[in-house]
Length: 396
Ligand SMILES: *Cc1c(COP(=O)(O)O)cnc(C)c1O
Image (cartoon, rainbow, N blue to C red):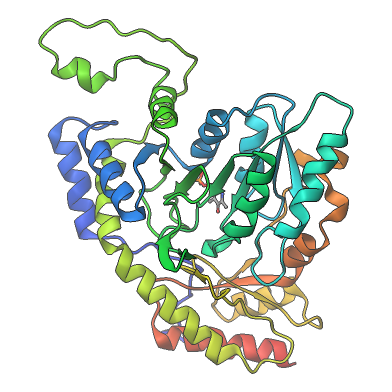
């Protein structure tokens, strides 16, 4: 490797002075945990996605946990979801004592196959045990909107709430009644976002719960702060002594004001980030199109991805690990495609329950796809390097 050939990372947050200044502002104010910056970030985020309410929390996993609790998921309930997602999706269901029922994906979009959802529902209804389907938790995988129209159609027929795991999908759009709308409006009942550094914007760690249901939003606010009846910001500013109470069992799922201050700056960069990612994704598409057997991701006509990850399916003749190693040796980091939850040890015990025998597309996507570097600051030359190396590997 020549000296000026820097290793190319898989992702890199676009973050700098404005965020550092914002964090400083929060720190110097003396109020560092959930406070005024969180409140501002929530308003700005709600306005961005076009929703009534946004509630900031510690990360997307805790967001999903609270979303499931809000729609009434209880121990032994079943929740329809995908195994082919970051493991936090399925884990959040198990935090409720509930059982994830895994549905296979569509190979082109890596998203839940709506045609298979009804099987998951009727299975559980036929089940003689007390368990039953209580909700559908769908994922906009790697930023690609899932087929919400078809999913909501089924959900309405069975009167099931729909939660959107939009961890990766900030800035993605879906065509809704002839208009492009942001993912997270929400189109289902609740949408949850992540601000982990691997996502499109970051607060270090952080999450956001979006809904148009004020009752749920009120619950989120109680739950995230220990179930405390009066937030400490209110007590802090009060002229009279106030005693708080704890009407419900809560959690500590707060976002700090330092994180929120950073998030507000990141939100300003978001349109530019999405534009750049879409440009680079399209460029990948044109440059990689002529590799025989390589399958590239494409958007359905009704979807615009933020391309949180650019995931390609390798030709059958390629070995995933070998390809990744050769690319790493050439200074290009890749990741394997999204891992399935169901083969993991944490999910082995009750594998049967999770429907792991019907997840062939999910397993193939895990074993045959890799994620290529894609980030805001990536230059076209850097992208060309990825293309050139991948071409070389695939054509041998
Ligand atoms: C990253 C991710 C999560 C978890 O988000 P955190 O903010 O790290 O908790 C959940 N679901 C999906 C699909 C993700 O990609």
